[in-house]
Length: 207
Image 1 (cartoon, helix red, strand yellow):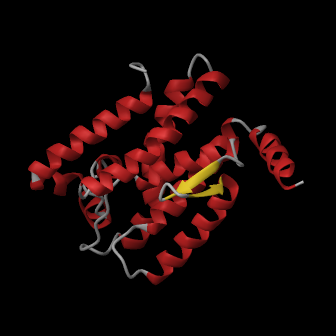
Image 2 (tube, helix red, strand yellow; image 1 turned 135 degrees about the vertical axis):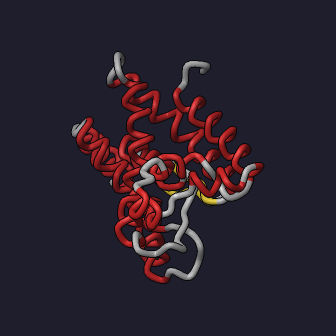
């Protein structure tokens, strides 16, 4: 447990978020702001924004989801690739932060007022990657309603697209959507056989 990359990510995210709550100027420097990245070449914002959160509730829900799916996925990577599994998981998580925000960057790079922060995009990547391995395991919404993972993925995708088009709240739904997509692509390239077990598990459930 002490050597777990997932726990290291959780600890770093908590500490960095707590520090930024005390130092607003640091929070501003770490926030995902496409305009400043584009005009000032502040590329670190792509990664740093994934380790800061707006408030405790934002932090809790992201890390709560990551705690369960991250540990499970890290273990899978370690089993499949014993020598480099943890390194692959760390690379996956960090690149997921960037990949989830790239569409937002290109869309908002001329908007100086757009800001985004949080690990939601990377967490979505972890969740979708986990669903590929265990598509029929239930994901509980609000801790009450259990939905099989592959159905949850479909509903989540539909919801993210719909909310992104509406654009009436302050949530970066685009990052959630593309983070989830990145999780599917990364695992597919890393371990294509996952789709065989995915189909078998879904078929066994439905038939």
